[in-house]
Length: 293
Image 1 (cartoon, rainbow, N blue to C red):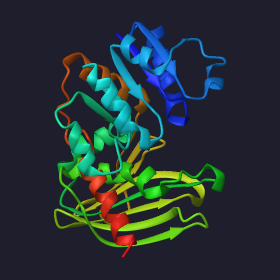
Image 2: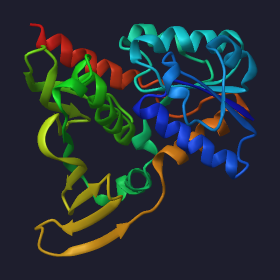
Image 3: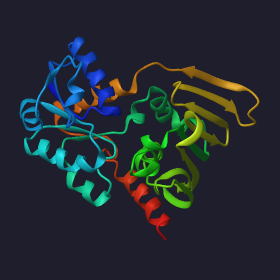
């Protein structure tokens, strides 16, 4: 399969590295890349092609450009009847995302492909009655590197999607606190949700001292701590006094995600739960709507 990659920003470079690795392993046949910034061509081993030529050439296309360009680019690929991978979020508005229902679209919610998250999903019902869930996604991001859409729509959609995917339902916002910087971008958020009568909290920050990605699940029988970066799960008894189980996983989420996309590309249909991330988009939209009140 020939794969075209449009966009060589942060996530685009991760996809580029993964695709080059897959090419060396002969998991794909060839790669072409394009970015509006031609300077990024330097040092690339693969072919460089204009956007239209790349779409015509490729069997499948990966889009890793700014979010406001996703919709138009995805439509150009789909018009050629080719499957498309689009970095999250697909678009900003759920109503616009509905235009892509039924199409061979794969949205890059990468945390679904983290091996430790897949373990959590597989065994979720075995942990007992879930009482409370927290997610943490924090880092220290310099002001010049903060995306204009803010942390809720840029990173929060990951955690909203994880809640939706784990519970296979849509959470509803019950309370939120948002902090903005001088440029009016949200840089910190603590958002409370209710999902299936279970309370959850999502904490997001660009102003913490260190990077952390975590999911904690509190049940009537145990406490499950999931470190997304170390791919480690630790399960304590309910009192938190003894460790019942611990395991560290191996596997690059970006590679597993790309393999899942190419598998979908071959069959031409995406059967994954909420594969467009509509519920996640709805959560982000509700948070932003409440903030404007």
